[in-house]
Image (cartoon, rainbow, N blue to C red; front, side, top):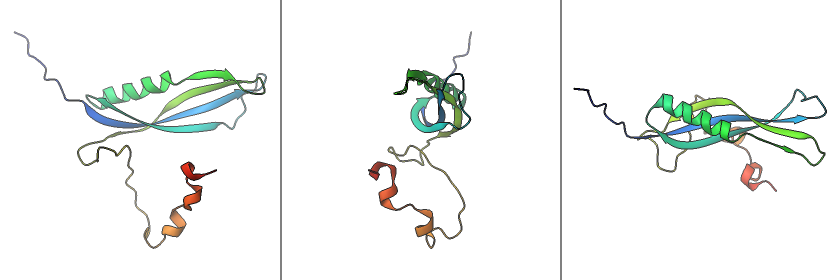
Length: 124
């Protein structure tokens, strides 16, 4: 008789993925690259499967295209920067968190927080 392995319920994970835009000007890709840090949320049955899913999503996002100057642009997946299990401590709409130690954050809020007009969604 074979033992039946229990099926784990899918857990919610969030992965921070790093991508680069590599622009080829002739044969020169340059040293400095514009990068994108992307956070994706998905379900997996454990951390190893979550890591595999994060990498799959990163590889799937790769593409290349000619820019307006006719140079080839490669949008490339660099790797997974972080992976979080979003457990019961997270709200349904929560997709990422960092726990850090800061010196007097409330008292220093003006130095720590950008002006609202500089938030990405509010920039012209």
